[in-house]
Amino acid sequence: MSNPASNASANVKPSASAAPRSAAPNPKAAVPVLLFSFVFCLVLDNGFKFMTKPIAESLDLSVSTASLQATLAGILIGIGAVVYAALADSISIRKLMIVGIGFVAVGSLLGYFFQGVWPIVLTARIIQTSGLAAAETLYVIYVTKYLSPEDQKTYLGFSTAAFQAALLIGTLTSGIVATYISWPAMFLISLILIVAIPFLIKTVPEEQQEKSHLDIFGLFLIAGIATAVMLFMQRFQWWWLAAAVLGIALFAWHIRTHDNAVVNPSFFTNARYVCALIVVLVVYMVQLGYSVILLPYMVDELYGINLDGAAYILAPGYLCAVIVGVMSGKVAKFLSSRQAIVAAISIIIVALLIPAVLPGAGVATVIASMILFPSGFALMYAPLVATALQNIPAAKSGVAIGFYNLTINIAVPVGIALTAMLVDSRPAFFSALSLAQSEAEGVSATIAWLLALMAVVGLLVYVISDRIISSTADNREKVYA
Image (cartoon, rainbow, N blue to C red):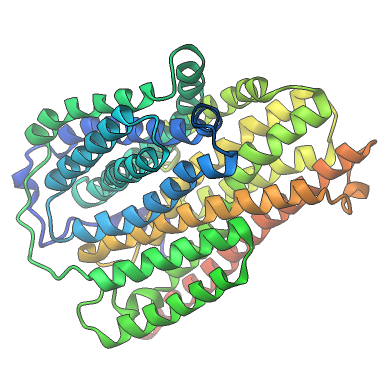
C-alpha cells in the first residue's frame, strides 16, 4: 500500500513548462511576500464581510441588499480561484500577482471616492475582489510548483494558519474601523497591498511558460454554475437550480467536444481528486455554518452574550488553529496524510458533539468546542490538498487547485445558508439525544447534531473511498510486479 504522506507531496512537482529552479536560486525567498499578500487579502475579504451592517446603515439599505457586497465577493473569490489557476499555467505568477494588486487598487479607490453611491460601491467591491482572489490562489500554486516535497506541507500549513488568523483579524479590524473610524476607511487600508509589488518583482521568478489556450467559454460556464448554485441556496428558487443543472450539462458537453477546454474529461476520472472534492464540499459546509451562524445564535439564546462577546469566544480557537497550521509540517513527520485527515475530521466531529450533547452546560463548553473546531480544519487542509493533487500532472496542478478552492467557496456559503435556514425553522427533533432542558437548548442541540452528522458523512466518504482506491492501486502493483 502506498504511503500518502510521502507520495502526496512527491507527485506535485514543478512543471516542465515552468522555469526550472535555477530561475529562482532560492524559491523560499518569495514565500514571505506571497504569504503576506495572502494573509492581507484574506483579512480584507473577511473584514468587508463583517461590514454589511455599517454599510446598510450608512447608505440606508436593507441588510440583504448590503450583503451583496459580501455574497458576490464570495462568488468571485471562488471563480477567481479557477481563473487565476488556469492563467498560471500560461502566465507567470509574478505578472498575475501584480495585475491582481492593480485590481485591488482600482476597486479600493473607486469605492472610497464614491462611498455614498451604492451601485458604484458594489462595483468597486467586485473589482477589488477580482484582485484579492489572485493572492488567495497563487500562493498555494507557487508552493506546489516551486518548493521541494519536504517543504510543501509546511508552507501549505502556513496558508491554513493564515486563513484562521485572517478570520479573527478581519473580524476585529472591521469592528474597530466601523466603530472608531468609518467603514469606507477599509478601502484605504486595502491600498497597503501596493507596497508588496517591489518585493514581488525581486523575489518571484519570471517563468518561461508554454503558450496555452485560455478557455473563456469554459470559465464563463464555471462562473455561471457557481453563481446559480449560490443564488439557489440563498433564495431557494428552483429556476436557479435548473440553471445550475443546465450549466453542468453544457460544461460536460464542452470539455468532451473541445480539445482546448479548461480541463480534459479525464481530469474528473482521477478518483483521489474527485473524492477529495466531495469531502471538501461536505465538510466545509459545516465550517462557517457553525462559527458564523450557530455559535452567535447559541451564545445569545442560551447565555445572553451579544455578537461582540461571541467574537471573543472565537479568539482562542482561531489562535490554536494558527498554531496547528504552523506546526502541520512537523505533524506530517509523525502522521501520514491519511491519519492526519481522519484525525482532523474526527476532531471537527467531537467539537460539534460538545454543544450537541451539552447545550446550555456553560460558556466553557462552547469555548472548548471552538478550540477544537477550527484546529480540526487547520490540521485537515494541507494533507487533503496534497492527497487531492497526488496523481495530478504538474502542468494541470494550477487548474486542480483552482477547482479545489472553488469547491470550498461554494461549500462555505451553502453551509451558511443551510444553517441559517435551520436556525429560522428551529428544529428540535434531536433534543432527546442531548441534555437540553429548554426549547432553545433543544434547537441548538439539534442543529449541532445535524452539522456533526454532515461531518461524519465527510469522514465516511474519505475512509471508504481511500480504502477502495488504495486497494485498487495495490492490486495493480501486484499485477505488474
